[in-house]
Image (cartoon, rainbow, N blue to C red; front, side, top):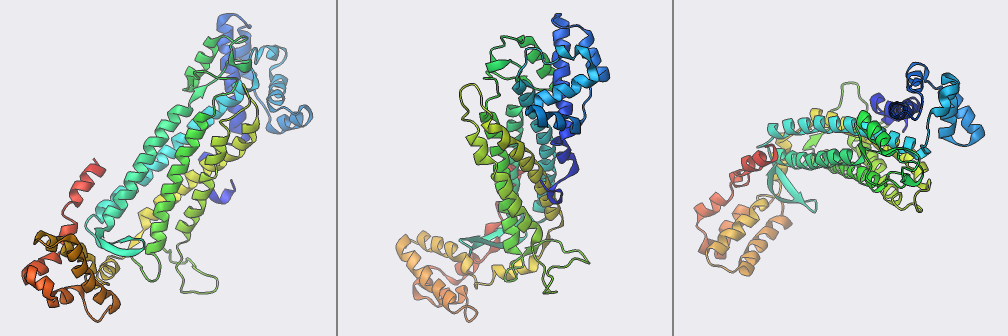
Length: 432
């Protein structure tokens, strides 16, 4: 991922330096258990702790010749350790190191993403509580529907991200497995206790059945969880982008004092952060299908998954980390125009109360079909002559309405409190 959309803590996890550091720890832990078992000299793990090291450029130089990254790594480590390096990697296969190390990297990444999610949830909860009773129009198909509150909008996004967090925690647990079972996963050349020892020390659990590689359904589930979170990011981002449109102006991204919106038009205040987040969500979701396709490998292993993961694992995690942090900033600093929300809510002259009129007529014994016809003909008078009349005026003139609903009932129908009376109930179950 390019530096523009990267944060240092996450990029470090996928750095060459960190990757080889984890490889060395896996090999060292394996040697510690082998030494305990007496299958290699106890000086080997001590040497690895004292002298074990590597040099990234040197590994690359060796790999250019041998065309194998794990062999290049082991060769470089041997240059630091000396003769007893021959005991390192005994009975193990490359995937034992690669897959176990990738599991460590993904759990490290997941821990950062979990923190990111918790920060975003905190920001959403705060703003939702702030605007719990801030009336605004709800829209379906982009058209005014019925009143809601801006806080309830945000509470819905909070609930979605809370589900995303739960999925991410489950995915972290699922991906945190260790595989040190040797060629084709039979433990023929490496004792199962070595895998258990390494797993325990790394905070992982032994893989149930590894066929030389950790099964890729785990990785597919992990990146699927990231993809759903990315979709939730896009969902909230699009909401902000729509609310910031000039014709709407109900909410907008913060705009700093010296910020410029357009190189050509000085008046512009564009929703660049949420547009950027929409794009980053695509990057994260782009990992999902390849991760699913990686599940189908030939027999006990092939490396068709390898190149995919070397690209998608860092990019998806780094992009999502950046996106979550950026979205938290957007929510924290979101400018809310309550007056515009109310003005837009009333723009259709009371049509948002149409369902309440429909229900009132049916309560008086009129069939739903006839009630719908009566309400719709009055609503269309307002719709077609917007600004020249309003819904209440049309209803009070309609003979069928007056015959069934007295004036006070009609007045009572136009009450915004009907739409906020259960907000506390929804908030209680959302933020419990």
